[in-house]
Image: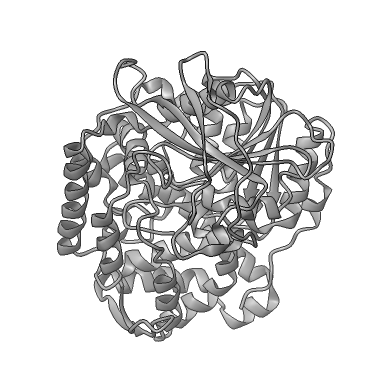
Length: 513
């Protein structure tokens, strides 16, 4: 899923993960049990529907559900409490291992429970229980910090130039309206950040009476998993981190440099395939020239609607095209279409690019924007400024125009949005590198333009028992589409110090369209 102010990587891949599963009566959940911090777990029926309009997301009978009850703000232990939604799938094995796997999804602001059936289908609960979490403020947790005001803007922004000042006004008005509504409801927005989020996950382990578990985190979930390992290492047997956003990296400053890394990998991969190289010679130069042209003269395209909907008007400016190449790597299945779409719009046919843009608009009321902005604003924007972000972008992509590079990929006006959200800064310790002897598997897709392989290398510097595995041709969220990554992950969880990653050496970039 893509929006003007955030990337929710795991949800982009929701259709791929919602495999099978019918609505059935959930298995019984553990009774309420106190944790040392005072957090408790309360059993509850699994949500039905799990995700509106997607019956395949309704959790199967192997799942039991409930809520972790924690302080909204741990600096105010006598303040209000919130509930974190949790689902646990039983191991498929008749003789399961005692150490479950907890799955931390991305965003920030993406829910985990809608991914449950798809994760089971990959075999993650083959030998151990699988625990999925809707992190604080997301879908089934209470309160849920969705923003219909922002969802409405995102939908309408498809027909606007993102570069236009009038679009900025509508964007900030939507963010302000949501913030005012949530604060009017008494929500402490500054409490929705990674420090509190990681403490929730640590409390979950003790509240469930789990002596030792394994942790998986993807995209923002990798940041969360690493901060959990750094600040709450107790009981962590092993860690798998996928599409890495290491805590020591300011994600907002890295957005354009990461985009440059992913674009270069894409263009090199096309050039390495004879058919792609013949069909689209000089693709990198075409891309640069077209971004510059569209920055001056946006194009307007009408695309057919889907499922009986009316046609949509799509405006493509320079920023939109540059961001499309980034956002499409959030879903590996879209990557083969990118060279064709770039060449088509460069030669006068914007329809393929417009189709990709229209398809990227996700369903409303899914994103937990309270966590999105709490993390981005308190942990990234608070530690940088617009000149530094732009300078990093211009060093990485000197041939793209300033009016494009002044808007960050996936979050074009995040600095201004954070000024509206106004939640202050996290403690600078949130950026401390993670150093741990715990066995770690670090997965990277070679065509990921959001969290490219270089960021896995950065995280691995503090993990002497870690191993970076690159999957050729994969984009963001490697585990969701790579059977090789799934096999490696399951083998690693079984034997973290002796597992087989050999299939990675045989992966290849799939043929481009």
